[in-house]
Image 1 (spheres, helix red, strand yellow):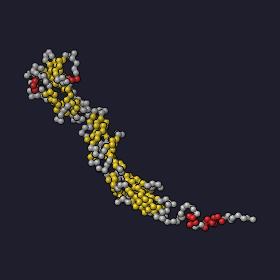
Image 2 (cartoon, one colour; image 1 turned 120 degrees about the vertical axis):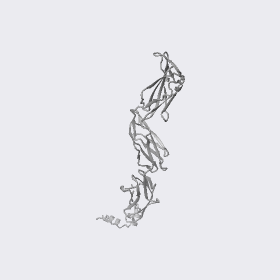
Image 3 (tube, rainbow, N blue to C red; image 1 turned 120 degrees about the horizontal axis):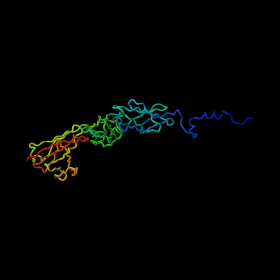
Image 4 (cartoon, helix red, strand yellow; image 1 turned 60 degrees about the vertical axis):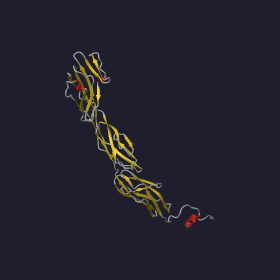
Length: 344
């Protein structure tokens, strides 16, 4: 005789339990058919940025009355990029804008029970993207150098917006400089060749799209400078040579200096001028060693004029001026000279 329970009795009892019985029995969960609201509030950290920068969307509150299902949250950034779906635990989303424009941002909430309401609490939900202003150019007043040399380029910066906190300069040769927003100029050494720099601004919204300068070309100066000696109105008079002067100029890299060496002699004696002691020194061929002080290197003024004061000249001597011009690339025009007989 079979005294056990019928096989189907347990299943029948379970199916007969109502929702209240499940909760009363201590079982977790709620009925799948229970309805509930889905709302969320969001804020943008900025609605005015420059190209290349980003905005951050932050979730302030999400109310989901059906927690057994995960709400899907998507963001349409308004610039034609793919709609972004936030990960389950994510409370922030960021997005970069590459082009100038006006972009409305929309957040959408979805659940198995339908769509919810998402609110962006900023005064405007449209992100305005503009180009970062500023002027960046090289001063090319001096971009000549010697062969295998280089030049120090001067980059001029102006009109940087007050909202910028950092200015990055990528020199294009693997080196970068970080400047303050009020920096008016900076320099960089370039080798021979053509170069451009890229300037990027930065603030709390990130870095902007870089601005590329016009090219800066470092050229080799192969051309020698030119120089002249100014002959006084009465060259035979010693007193007219108290100050020796001339001109020198260079059409490329610019003048460095003019070298001057002075001699005087009679039929029996020779002298060179020592610029250090400011005295004439007896010279004996084959015995006297000429010191470096026998040559004076003189710069030129804005008009290209160089001058050398000379004491101790008198009649009865032959007087010789040797001079050479050298530019900043090291090119020279060769030594020139003038000999003058002093008769008075």
